[in-house]
Amino acid sequence: MNKNPIDSSTVKSHPSYGAITLGRKSSGAPHPMYGSSVKHRDTIRLTLHHGECKRMLSGDWYSPKDTIVEVEMTQNQWAELVSSIGLDAGVPCTIKWLNGPVEDPPFQSKVSEFQAEFQACMDGALSNADEMIVRAKNLLGKKALTKADRDELLKLLQSIQNSVRSQAPFIYKQFAEQMEKTATEVKGELEAWQLSRITELAAMGLASKDATESGPDVPPIEIGS
Image 1 (cartoon, rainbow, N blue to C red):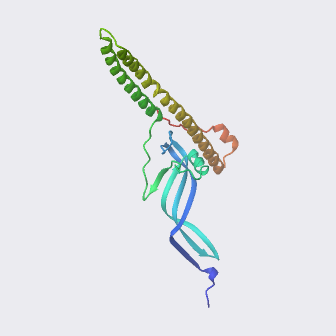
Image 2 (tube, rainbow, N blue to C red):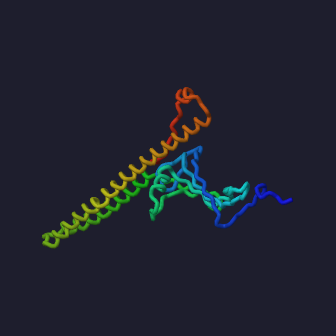
Image 3 (cartoon, rainbow, N blue to C red):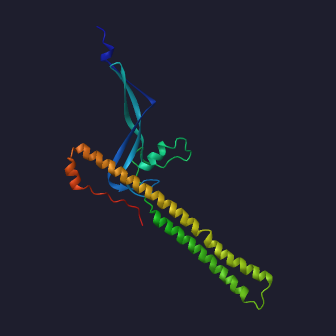
C-alpha cells in the first residue's frame, strides 16, 4: 500500500536559506548602545538565522535554526532605518551575537567628551596666546617700532582673537546639536518603556484601577556627566 504523500514530510535546507526575526527586548538594567548617548532598557532586536523548510501537509513550513548574527537598535535607530532606505552611511546598531555573544560597547558621556574637547581647545588657544605675548613683548621692547613691527604686532593680536573665535563657537554649535539629539533619544527611550509597560500590564491582565493606583515608576535614564 502506497503511503499518502500528505502524511509524509521532508525537510529541505541550503546555505542560502535564512530567516529573520524582529522583536522588542526589555532588559533588567539600562545598557550602553553604539550610536546613542544614553543607556537603554527597551530596544529592538533583529536576528538573522539559518533557515529550513519543512514540506508537510501539502504546504511549506519555514522555521529559523542557528543564529548567524543578532543586532540591537534603539527605537530611534529602528525608525531611522526603515525611513532611510538607500542611505549609504547606514544606521548605527549594536552587535549582540556574532559567532558567540558580544560584550556591550563602552559608554561615553557626551557631556564629559565635549568638556574635554573644549578644554583642549582653550588650552591650545592659551598656549598660542602665551607665545604671541612673548613675541609682542620683544617687539615693544624696541626703542622705535617700524611699520613692519606694527604690522606684525597687529597680526599677533588678530591671531589670538582668531584662535578663540574660530574654535569655541564651532564646539558650542556641535554641543547644542548633540544635546538636541540626546533629548530625542531620551524621549524615544521613555516612549519605548511606556509601550513595554502597557504591553506588560495587558499581558498580566491587571485591573485598570490597580494599575493606576500603583503608579508605575519611571526608569532612570543615564546620560552621564
